[in-house]
Amino acid sequence: MQWECELKRLLAAYEAVQKELERKTGESDGQYYEGSKDAYDYVINSLRNLLNHAARSVRHASRDVAA
Image 1: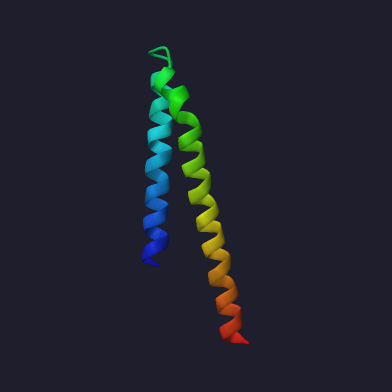
Image 2: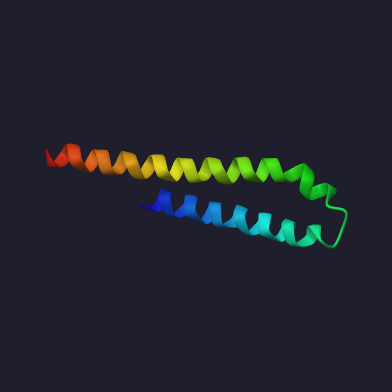
């Protein structure tokens, strides 16, 4: 499924940016990271929830077709 692949790529990109911000926090005072952490956590958790919901929807649709 194309949309699932795109969501996974977007999630991976956000996780990579968050890891880089965490790494750079040790090199500076971390103000940018602290201001962005909640936003990145929200986006990452929302993408994970969306992927889980979509996977459940596909499973339910498959069962309905089989029945």
